[in-house]
Length: 266
Image (cartoon, rainbow, N blue to C red; front, top):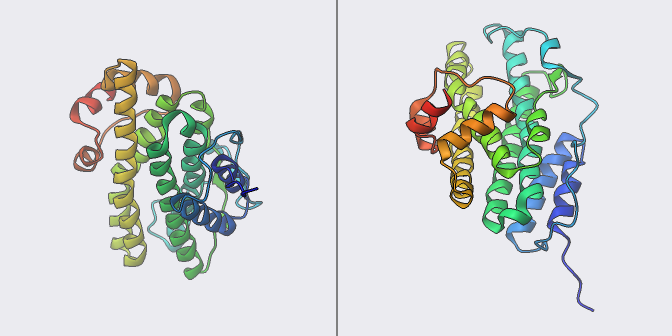
């Protein structure tokens, strides 16, 4: 009998349930290579976990229990900021994997290809920041991190439109707004290396947000919805924070968030 290819959904779940950060990075890269090479059966019989596995460190705290980290001017503040960004990228790996595994059967090959490519990017971003922490004498897990990032996935697990509206189109889009100022902060203290890493991240995130807006537009067309109003409805229902200016208008436009979209939301 011919051997059957491993299931894509089972492979995604296995990476999501890998707690060690370096092993998760390597597993993500291997998963994406296998998918692109056609070595995984495009099947979705395996459910995604409600919560990905997490390493013992960092200690995860509620957002309101996190210690203040300052604005990045001191060495301690810089390390805390890099650590926080590293944690965001680590969780973003699982956010992208979950989107591919949870909604892939419904949305098809192109959707899965896009979100697995995002997962590979997030794994690379995490690895760059984790290496930077080690160069500066620290490591990922040395400080606590907040446990609120997965709430968006839990809140939108029932609907792909809600997932796209909140994760790429709000959370990642917020990175487009704030990262340029963060880059300037690192440059101001002479840390050009971290600034270059963050520039790479924000450049990639324009593409990630564009994936979100383009797939959201397709869903709106299928459901007979007006994208600006539907986005506002979903964000109001499923996002606990607020979306408010200042916005990085040029980056948001490049990512497909038009002035009409932003006016509806803001």
